[in-house]
Structure formats: structure tokens, C-alpha cells
Length: 416
Ligand SMILES: Cc1ncc(COP(=O)(O)O)c(C=O)c1O
Image 1 (cartoon, rainbow, N blue to C red):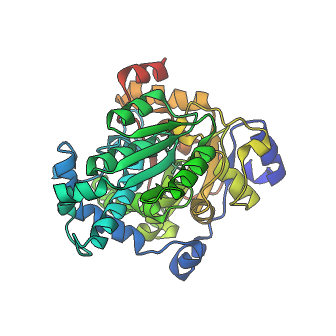
Image 2 (cartoon, rainbow, N blue to C red):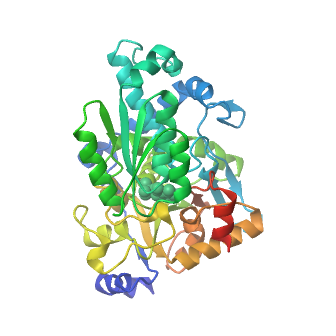
């Protein structure tokens, strides 16, 4: 069983691109409470993000008339569903998030709003805490048009940042890694964003984008490898989840925790969700697990090696080739890595073939249309049962992180 596998043996399996499951020992005190400052996070951050998103509802309704959740216009939230096919599993349908159709809507829209709010405050257009509806006025849009927002992405963060930035009137420059799907680039261009295509991987797209942005005055770089604004946007998912769980009769506790399976790329999304859940329910009442492709286990290797900077999966002979474009990341975020190491109960990998099976199964049983990255967590409960001595969960959630904007022909290709 798992406990008999040494760290060295696990690294050998990872090198051979075999699916592995690492049971981690969480150390939540390293990021919660006063230690949070050392880890670079502030427990007030997620509530501040939630407040900003609330103040942005009028603005988002104006910019995106279709944006709403559960009858609440301008709200960026997604449903928690029970599956027809598998009663024991709940799914959090972030592919249904408005505007960007993926988990990246949470962090990306939040960071663009932070930046827009900052510019408008500096210009004396709004005061701290104001409703953000004023940011849609033509005078403010003219001001934003003088500014650029730039990001490096495998696709979905680019969509989230690019679509929101353009809607507010900013110039948007999106550096896309070689893994990014053509339809995501086309969609961004249709919104008037400039797409810069790279031959290199995600880390390269981020590095080049960061340097290009730094060389330009009035360019703001959304740094997926180190952004608290993104992280707090993801973390703001946790408080509404309490109510959603209650609607399913689920009340997580230290005896019966909530188990959550989170597809993981650079780590910001899963770190943010894990952090938000630990703040909301208490670290004892949650078990968060990350899942990465067998060819791109950046976070797993970082936690195993206790090395959160400078590690790349290619150092282990891995290719980074995966059809799960959102998870095709070779190096972990320096902010997210230690948070995942401190909060997650386990980190595991899946082959592309396994993810594809999950994608097909959930479409056949429940009609849910996912992209490959989004399906990664569906095998989590079965993988967890292989670990001995774990608590009986109050509920298990596979976080379905994207697929909302997937064109029909792309989805058919994935199904085939
Ligand atoms: C669909 C999907 N799921 C999960 C992730 C992982 O998020 P992160 O890179 O923040 O770990 C991404 C990243 O782009 C994604 O597009």
C-alpha cells in the first residue's frame, strides 16, 4: 500500500509517467493564523475579494447582460450538483461560471477588477468601497483604453483576463503557451485581445509576458506564478459553498470531512480553493487533493522535493505533453506551492486516457460537457479509497473546472 512506497520509489514511478498517489501530511498552521503573513497570504483576502465581486455585480451585468447565477445578475458563481450516475459524488460545475466558463473566471475577473478599481481610485473617479458600476462610464473607459493588461496562460486564464479587460476598455495582451487550444486564441481575438503565440511551455509564456509587460509603462501583468489577487478570487468560492452543501444536507466536520478533488496546473486555483475551504470550514474539516497529468506533476514533485522554486518536470524526464491544456504546467507557482504543501491531504496524477474516460462517462451519465482538464478530479474518490485509515467523508466533490465555452466540434473531438 501507499505507506510502504518510499519517496524515492514514488519519484521513480513519476519519472516513468505512472499514475501515483502521494498522501501528504498537512501542516495548516504554516499558512493559517499569524503564519499566513510568512506564506504571503492574509486571511482577510478572500472576504475582501468577495466584497469586491459583490460591488462589481452591477458593472458585470452592464458589461455582460447574460452574466447571472441563481437569479442574481452579475454574480460569478457555479452550481453544486449531485450526479445521476454516482450518488456518492457531488460536482462543482465551474465550467458554468459566467463570462469565462472555467475556474479561471473566479481569479481572473477578480484581478482585472482590482486593477481597474485601483486606476479609477488614483484618478479620483471612485472612493474605496464604492460600487464599481461607475467603471462602465465612457470617461472611465477612455482612461482604461490608455492602459494594457497582460498575462501568460495555457488558455483559460487568458480568456478570463482578456474578455474582462476588453469589456472594460483595456488593451489586452495574452501570451499563450504552445499547449493553448486554437479555439481559445480565436475567441480571444474576436474580443479584440492581442494573442502572442509561443513555441515554449507555460513557464516560457509567463516569463516572456512578464518581461514584455515590465518594459512597457501602463502595462499591468497578471502573474499566474505569484498572484494573491488571483488566489483570493478563487478562495472566495468557499463561503457560498457552505450554503450549497447545506442544500445537499452536508455539514463537514473533523469527524466527517469534506473531500475535494482539484485539477491542478500552476497551483493557484487549487491553492486558493483549499485555502478558502480551510478558512471557511476549519482545516480539520476539509481534505483537499490536487490532481495533475502524469506528464506534468509540477506541484506533486515540488511537495515531494520540498522545493518550490526552480523545479521543472523536464528535469525528471517528463515531456509536459498532455491534452489537458490547463494542466500543462512544468513549474509550480511560488505562492501556491507552499500553500498546497501545507493544506492538501494528498497529491496524485492521472493519465490522459483516464481523464478521457471520466469525460466520456460523465457525459454519458449526466450530460455534462467538460474539457479534459476539468474531468481530471472525477477519479479522486476511487483513488482515495486505496489509502488506509482515512475518515469517512461527509461528502466528496470533484471540482469540474472548465468546459463552458467549448465549441461543439472540439467537444466531439474530445469524446471520440
Ligand atoms: C480547466 C482548468 N482546470 C484547472 C486549471 C488549473 O488551475 P491552476 O493553473 O491555477 O492550477 C486550469 C488552468 O488553466 C484550467 O484551465
